[in-house]
Each structure stands twice: as C-alpha cells, then as structure tokens.
Length: 115
Image 1 (cartoon, rainbow, N blue to C red):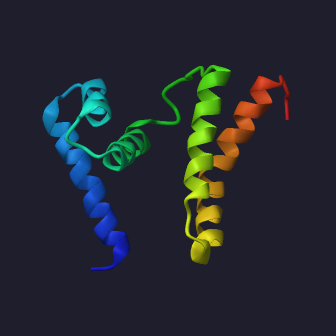
Image 2: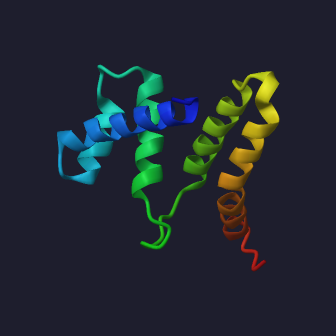
C-alpha cells in the first residue's frame, strides 16, 4: 500500500468515527473540534478533512470577518513554515492550486474589485 492510500484510509477513518457520533453534521464537526481524546494534530486534520468533504461550493455564501480570514491565513502560514525543505515545491504547488482562487475572491471582495 502506498503512502497516498494509507493517508486516505486514515482520513476516512477519522470521518467515519465523527459520523458515528451523530447524524447532525454540526455535531460531527464539534466532536472533531472538542474531543479531548484526539491530539491537536488529529483534531486539525479531522476538521480540515470534514470541511473539505462536506462543504459544497454551490450551497450559498458564507461571510467571513477580517479576523477570521487573518486566523485562517495564520494557519496556512504555520503549516507552510513547518514543511520539510526537500519537498517544498510540490507541496507549495498543491497548496497554491487549492487556495489561489478563493484567496483571490476574498481579496477582491474585501477591496471591492470587479476583476
């Protein structure tokens, strides 16, 4: 089994465990967020994986305040700073592909740009 499949199994297991706690999606997220038996790393991974799997780009809008965006970007910054040097470019490319459009959208909206 390669590393990618192993990571997917772990990711799926975290979500299966959260889903088994409640049928209510919010309660599933809260379980990942507040479960004292999880390490902070497991909690962060679980919350990110849950949001990735359960948020739909076409369900409507969510308004974020500047402080929320700042905290989100601080989280990205910390993750980037902890990366190992030998495979940075591949990870940076992946992060860039995931976030560049939404960050552009957030910034355009913040500064009332039409482009």
